[in-house]
Image (cartoon, rainbow over the protein chains, first blue to last red):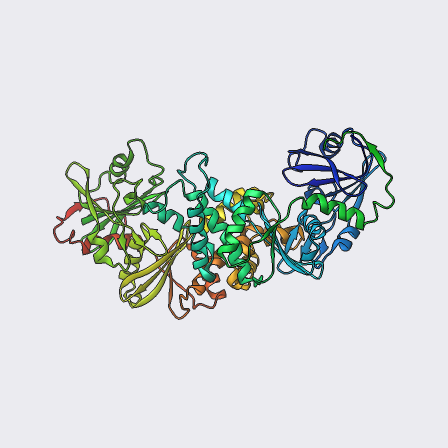
Length: 318
Length: 318
């Protein structure tokens, strides 16, 4: 099966690289994924990764978003200030020559001055999500769970503000290196304990303005008292940490009337749905394929598609 | 020079062991310190450590406090509930035979049920501090900075409540293993940057109910923006973390009228004095020698001194 293709999109983060090949209407007709995040490049670096992941694909124009535009990336692309929309982000893109005669446009990240905060890659996912669900353009809160979770407020079609909480990184540090994770079963192969997770959520919610730091050590105290088993610790701690994101959001007055949208790993999103309900939010909408859609939107907004020649591609598998 | 001696006291924690030899009136006439915390015992374990650190000392009755009474210690001594005073703690001590004919009484730790929390060793320091400064018996807040900082409220001569914040452990994890500590100079030999420390305090104070988790990532954002140098990161992060203790204390309504007392390492106490002032507290009193005094108090309260024979000791160095 063959298709006329117009664009290559790269979602290039710290730990992985995903590539998308789009047809003339923006449908993804092929995609590839490698563990070549910018900290884990193959021999030959960025160029080698680019050539390998686009191998045998037509010579379309390309766009990329994520840590590839950071100081440690292929080319540093200065941050764009919030409030930001597809137009201001597209305008901030920088062009490099990925290989002879092949242009690659790298998207900027966003920054907020006060309090200081930055994102790279998530802005593109949000732009994609807004294209997929235009009803959220007027007002929504996008939550992107992960190593560094992002909470972004969209108002009148623009990303108005955002906040980072280092939930995933802190959770991993606590489990791996702190006294709270000491002596736990080597691998958590047991199923998700919703009971322990809810107990963590409840504990941090009840801390009110004090927050999770005032309750972290209770993990240890409950274990010593025999009230929390070693098997329950990971999900209890997960509830504490994810609950803290919602506690902060409420303190920051991310109003509970604003609809929540989730973009991320499915099982992680499931935890956030449980947490949202526990903290009195309506059930969030989970939005898939946001990155691929966002890359297409940025290329379109930048005017890269209007001038891009169509190429024929015969490797369509779907 | 020789003295009549009556008691041996052991302050035995996770990472170190201190031993004190007291005269008949409770003055320390000799002391020793080894790196034999309960996780770092010499060959021969607890018994060998005991024999070595009391070598050549008279066969006095002995008391010990700290992690030596934990599940991983020499003998697990059940926690005593708060509110607690010298009498209830002394009553909770358990006797073991450290070696043939030598009794060693191990102090219990304290526990609080809701929210769950525990301490071991700090209760003895607080008892000692109250004996040294009886004016704080009516009402004071004792802050013991460290790996797991403790904030304990004393009311009417009793330890009424306490809270643990994992400040030191979290700080070390963030510096050593997180993205915030990545790429910093290998060793921080530069002097304390009060400017960076105050900026950290200010940042977490201004977060109000949101707390330190909502601001941790700003360390990264400020570095990327060139507004925080790599050299300033350690003290900025220290300000964030220590400031969070004070933010929590205020949220918990440890009233600022209650006098603050500090027990701990001198340079760490200096940081807490700066933080206390920044958060609107009167300058805290730093109390030294609290552990040695507390062990004596527990022995006295338990009635161990009245029946203890005096031994002559000729190794007094002071």
